[in-house]
Image (cartoon, rainbow, N blue to C red; front, side, top):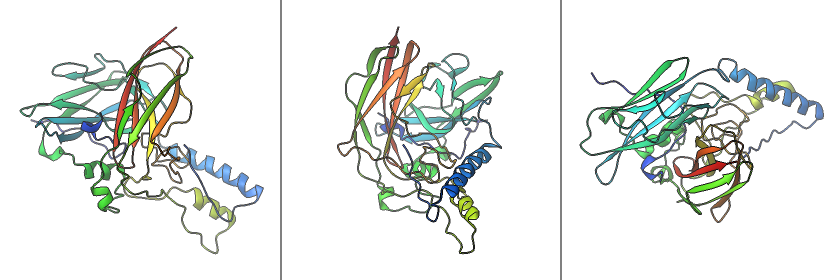
Length: 340
């Protein structure tokens, strides 16, 4: 009997065989200092309420098999992701019995550092055209609880670009499925300099990338507050302004962003500016394309993005950079050796 892959309905997209902040809020009619104070209190209360039924920490991570894509040479790429049930805690699970693939090599390029919540299409494994059977990813993150995901080439799990964009919210539940979406290609990211670096603890490391993109899909703004009713009181208007929209499927802002993340490495890593989240944070007022009232920061016209990163503990780190055009992602990796 064939085991079925674990699947979730979150977002965070990558087209794997081509792997290689801020927000602005406008609220009319809210001008007095008293209303501003009320707004801040309500915004805090709203964010807290959104997390009441979930966990900031203490939960585990489940691996997920997303599906497969066909490669031009006849091989296939199996795409995997994960669901970290925590909203804040990031977990580290080194390669070994608690984070391994089988059959074959235990290390298949999977992450050892897990960001919060749903992360889709994080990495891929290329298999030959005649591949049969399954690849099993085992992940143990909390008190010996074993989670597994099973990758196979079942026809039900074929992934097209439009499928990836739909699952990430670009198509917005079937809407906005226009030519600019259908013809979208993932951005291409090029790292300036070596892919392996050495740096001392606390010493800033400058990373520069160049991004090339086709300018698709067209920009689509994020969530806006619902229209006011004439009879609304000031408090009702404030509550409506910060209330996340009710939607039956994931939705997101469509626009270009670039972010660095820690893919492997357990020490604290600091970036020179707040990196736009690559995981699906659907809470209001978060630095996330899936967050209500968020807008993407301006990108350099020449497509070159510079970032300084520093490390507080020695060891080896793998950083992964994501160029996200609002539908598909291109990525680049750099390995950093941090010494005393």
